[in-house]
Image (tube, rainbow, N blue to C red; front, top):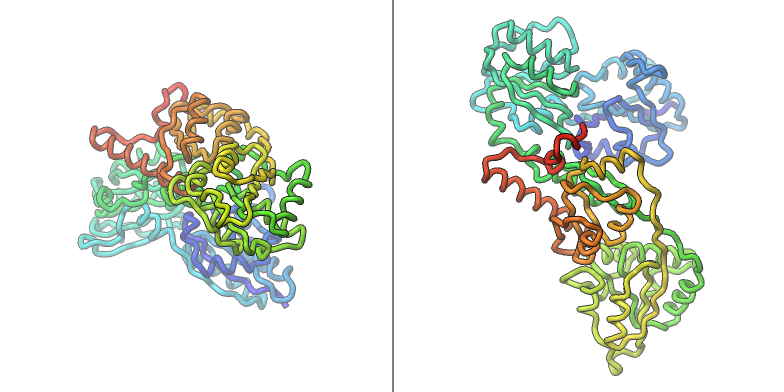
Length: 529
């Protein structure tokens, strides 16, 4: 029995525009057949680890495949999957719009393969909307969509300046269509918006006129997504919402592991920024596990009154040790649990443990110490605290707990090892100022980044998660521009976005054009992105 095929629209570029149905089908797919414009990593984020990926855009020699060849690939993939599996044919934008759906669906029908079609958000509407150009208004009488890559268009149908015309296709085809409109009688002063890499955080929009469009196209990079010819282009100043995000177009360095950086990447993207993750540490088990094993036995047998978690890595290390020994969260019964902050508390809750103590103010070792109760001989039957931590953890919490009467077992639950240096081009970008900002989530990320990649350029905005991290950054000769109001990764991103708003307000008050921090480097040090 051959597989069934689902023709699924991936949207115009923004991964957030993938529909719920598309996401569910990707998660169930045995094979995914991709268009060239769809980023493979976006698919792998939803698909199974063992999914087979087939590129339907180019052949082995790099030649662009025809619709007929793509149709054969889809049929071949469906026949290769047994037991009624699923092949997802992921198509850019909406499958029914300029994507060869008809040819591929006919090939499936001829081969006796059943198929579904899942519409996607079309570039025809999304790119203009993301560029801040409404397709309709009281001043527009109709909306047209033109595939410039197809020949034989009668452009005289689109010469009324009250119409909105969205032109899709290759940059060359778009340019020819704009020239043809001018020759057919659409006014030279007609408003045009040219959009590069539409709906992505790398989007750039240019406003011009039909008469000047050809010269404007010559200056662009060749990644034009669409041209919008409409009187509504004049509304961009009041309707623009995407390119006015606080960090739009910023390139932000996140010195963290990929597993830890997921929430920060998503929040940065919501503010319009692109995140580059550069791991600076590697988390490894302790060299001698006996101390940890003894601590776990003591925890189970009632040796401790409290256990304090100062990081998500500590939660992960203890949980992994528990699972190795066949234990689960029930072993924490009767034990009081403290967490250094909200993120660590969430990691405990995922394990089924609701912490008894989380600081409401500063989320750090010092903040946890401020709210930790003193040992009371009457109320506390046991005077001992377990702190499973990193091998390089500071002594602030240990010393403070001992000062208020507690005995502390400070146990190495995991080791933090400096990561290998990033690639040369990344090191050059860090030192050369290609990054607009860097987000430091701990003192160790400061030390390790400087150690493996060098100091960030003075033009780069430095944002730190708390006072201790900021102090370390200053000790390494860095100017701290942003300090998070609370010690969490998302709060740090929010604080950076607030800084971006401040820069925009300051530029507006002085009448200057808003520049990203990387644009403020001396011209001789500036590199092309």
